[in-house]
Length: 222
Image 1 (cartoon, rainbow, N blue to C red):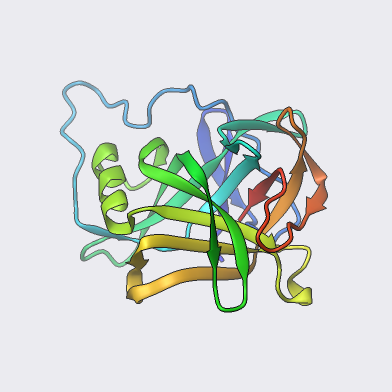
Image 2 (cartoon, rainbow, N blue to C red; image 1 turned 30 degrees about the vertical axis):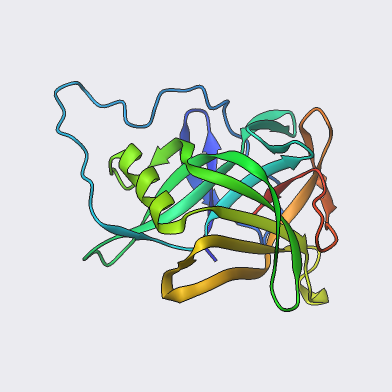
């Protein structure tokens, strides 16, 4: 399981355990900081290589009845909703991380043969770049991911298997098949939900497990 990145001050620093761990959401700044690609005017343009984006992302999403909250608080500290994508350029042997603040579109539903999920649909092309560890052209990456995936969604539900609880199952789906022609992806016990009040304050000691086909107001870490 990949680790989610901890956001502190104005940079993304070392990783903590992802959805399988017991820790709460990561404290993070308000997303009104400098743009990731603030390069000097005379700097050469960033590359636009061909790449493949992994179907699984990590991060944290604060979800309430209105959609994805851009900001929330955890243990009194400001935090943001973010997703980390994993890109592998053609010919490269290792991937790199590209983190966005996702633009919410609407709620939807998704399912497998055994599971039901309430999902959030997000617009990759309209999202804000938080950090580009790939050092690719940001606008190009957003457009290419949107082209590869089409409409994308992510959902959470109480883990199907008792041994995975209180973690939640995480569901990924897209209009276009993921790499290896995967229709959708489920990470069993791949996340954890923490209760969120109407004002966006998250209680990292109160774990929630939404029933299949529902979502509770919470910060979902995965």
